[in-house]
Image (cartoon, rainbow, N blue to C red; front, side, top):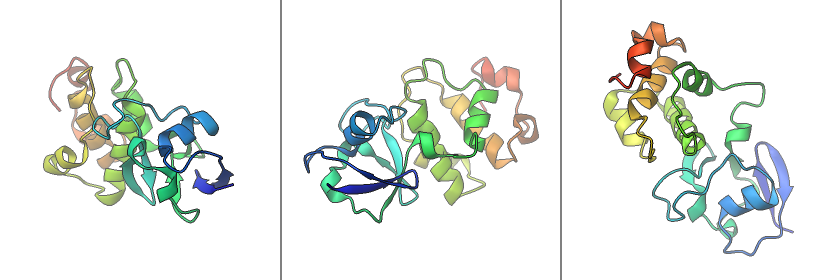
Length: 168
């Protein structure tokens, strides 16, 4: 049986070689935090980390992966509790319907790992995920809060203004 490294653990699967990673994660491994959105790598709901970089798991066949590659899903983002991005997401009420949020959080966490103090241009370039609810101002505010140390107030953000949909 082929093997993958998911959230720090070796796991086996019996998927066909052309099966997208997304379906192995959800259907065979029960990691349903990674969502199916568009199936063509456009929306980002299926974002996971592959060797530390955000990738769209709906477009990666499992045959393209090696057991040495590290796959991290939203369930494995912070094994000891909530990741700082998740904390900021909750503090600023980022999700509305919440469907796309695991992918958004994975993309934001990768951005902040690469650039701990991202500019607005960095955020725009990295956050290509689609949110049908339109919580982009809150996403930006949460990323800035993490970059400022985790407390939205330390980022100079008016929490009530951001929660009401104002610009960050």
